[in-house]
Image 1 (cartoon, helix red, strand yellow):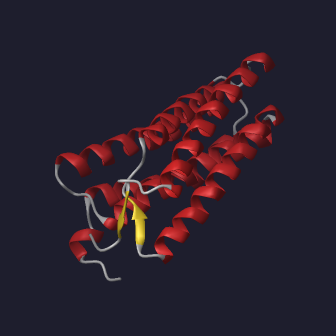
Image 2 (cartoon, rainbow, N blue to C red; image 1 turned 180 degrees about the vertical axis):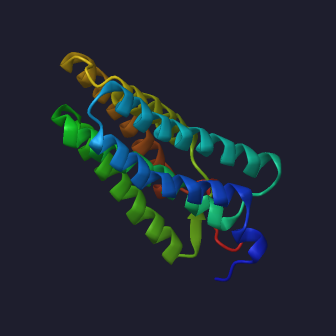
Image 3 (cartoon, helix red, strand yellow; image 1 turned 90 degrees about the horizontal axis):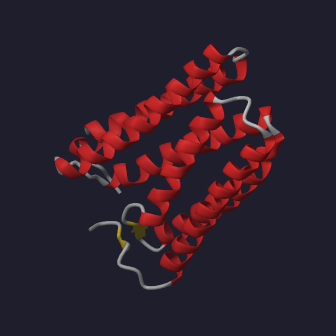
Length: 190
């Protein structure tokens, strides 16, 4: 499968690549953070990443810059960002471990199913609404956990529970999509 330069060099793809480059910046800033200002700086990098995600999707749709690469690169950047943020948060706060476990199960399933689709010459045609809502809830929740380091344990558990519910709903939605003849699955060459 070959991609044209027009498909590779798009503004949305550049923004997704930028988000991937922000991941180690965030991780270093967060893991070295010691005072409130440090956490706010780390959260700012994370929020820039989240806003860039919204902008790249808008540009892709509004200016017809959707591409097969972008359909894969955007969620890859999302999941990599989410995964690193959840890992960093878990390293500082073990109450977040259940969220990390659910995240790994969900994304492991998604990866296996995406590979199966690719093997059969098909792909998921963008995110489902449940996935978009889940991503939004995760980004807001994780930003709050980064900025407000001293959230009481009960508050952390509540955030973890809410995010877990949205992840499970998203997982169920994608499982139904993968195991049924869904309009969200298309041939790669379309």
